[in-house]
Length: 261
Image (cartoon, rainbow, N blue to C red):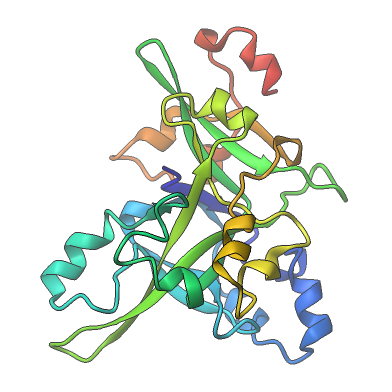
């Protein structure tokens, strides 16, 4: 669930809603130089385990680049590390305090992952229709709004080479009303921090009760969505292109085409 997202504003930190508050706290913030080198990401596929900019709890004013697909520090071999990461792209909020690999990370290894959209599929009969879900931009509806997923992270040290690899996974929660319509088989959605409250997730010393209180679905009034081309389903074609986020319609959706126009 939520193994695909977009980050088209990746090289424009001045448009990140959190960027201005960072500068107010730390004028020497080390975020812009490395980000300026990143190309826009139209389709980030979790199963490619690529590096992505994140903000970790222990370094809240520095941008790190970690691989998507959590490899817990206690993993002993490279073979085991490669095997486990595909099952650790996300973790359910309801299980995060019980799973062996996440129950300690949720206490002190929380992170923020920037994006400006994510993809989910609606099942209609025998068809799976892809949608791009975004947040509404209160300042300019024509511009993409950068939001922040909540996640957890760890650093794995390869026992054979000594190489350090930072990895992360997203947290998922139950779907809000809009996402129940779109992701109508799993009824899940990624955990997204409410705009203006992003720092709450990486605040040190939070109690378990405080963390649990944050783990709620973002209300759907913040969100908008539209169907996108089947290009995102292709394993042969390059889907990391502008066309993948283009708004399209499908006859099978009927009136839903207008609802998500």
